[in-house]
Each structure stands twice: as C-alpha cells, then as structure tokens.
Image (cartoon, rainbow, N blue to C red):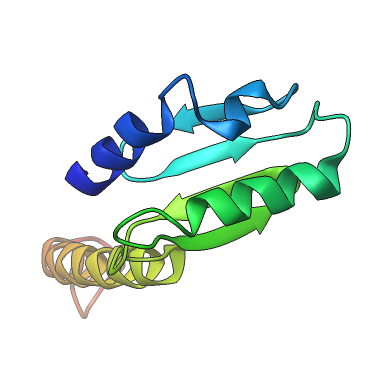
Length: 117
C-alpha cells in the first residue's frame, strides 16, 4: 500500500507527461494503480507513453494491460490466482467443518427414517 501511495504521489505531479495526454485517467485502487486510456486519441501511442513512464517508477511495478487499461502492481503482490487458491482453501475448511457438524446432528435411526428416535 505504501508503494502505491508513493507511486501515486510521484505520478500526480503537474509536469507528468501523461497528464497532458487527453483521455487518460489514473485510478488509485489502494493496492494497485490503473491508467485508463479508453478515451485517448491515439491509444497505441498513449499506451507506449504510459508503459515508459511506469517503468521508471521505483520499485518497478509489474505491468498488466487490459482493455484500454494499464495496471501497475507492486512487486511481490499476490495475484488473482493466489487469492482464489486461498479463498478455496478457506471454503473447503469451512465446508468440512459444516459437513461434519451437519452429519453429526442429522444421523438417522437405523430402524426407521426418523432422526434420532
């Protein structure tokens, strides 16, 4: 988060070349930054300008481009795959606890279909 704040402070200066490029916006996503350039006149040249500028940041961000967006990710930041794996691991553990508790509460009498005769 501190890295993104430092990048944001640096990129917010009036002398920044991207600031005079029409149709470009910088979004602070707290844990990353995103340049949006959908409304730029020349998208290819604008992307090149943004990539060149982003590469001069310290520490150097991981650059992920999307549909008219360039995401700046701090070094060592987890990606969506790692986040999904952690979420699945948590979900599996919760399901296992829930299934174990439910099975225990709903055991059926062996002689009939009722629960706990």
